[in-house]
Amino acid sequence: MLKNFDSVLAGGKILKDSPTTTAALAECGGQMLFLKRTNNKNWKFTLRYLFRSARPFRSARAAEKFSQLGIPTPPVIAAGECRCGLILKCGYLITGTEPGICGMNQAIREAADPVGEMSVFLKKAAVMMAALHRNRVIHGDLKLCNFYRGGNGEPGIWDLDSVRIYRSRVPLREVEKELTRLIASCVELLRRIPGVPEPEIDSMTSRFCREYCAYSPLVPSGTKVAGLVRALLERWRNKK
View (cartoon, one colour):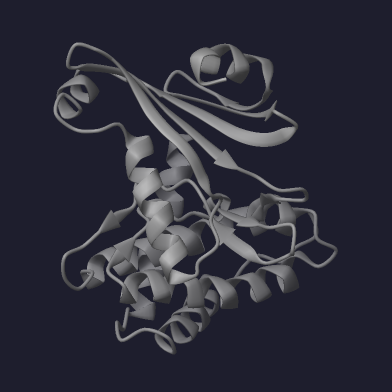
């Protein structure tokens, strides 16, 4: 399969297909796998990765770190890259999957009680994020869609391409940005579900920050994060 990655990817169940990324589920040897190819975006991408490994190798290292911390993430089976001389053409990632796994955004959207499901999820997300930050790890793109619900019903984290591991303490501003991204994506999802009341950003943010602080020595400002949430939602709205 490794010799024919692109054809196996094209023949699988396509989950994402953009100029920069193609992802699919495909069967190999009776086992379902998640395959992802990241493509060269532009000349800036070319220069950045002349002497740097492709992102799938970062994902693989991050998955090992998550495993050490006891945070569920799909196991990395293989990571690779294709180059023409020093120029990185694309990166390849293969991870395991499991029956019943789905994105947390899908799980909440399809729940009988989306607000209740969101509340339960956010309590667990606060514990997981605090564990990452205590151990000097920032995910870098921790929106709701980058959490998943495993076959056992418990949440995990995937899409580790942007993970950074700091040598010392994680900067508080990075923690606040990470919390902002998650809460904003939660608000945006709830707004799209028919019949669900308009989310109260201040109360949701305050509650989440309190739950986060119960497990973290870092103390993000609920007021500041709520303001950042509103600003991010406005930026997302203007992009549409």
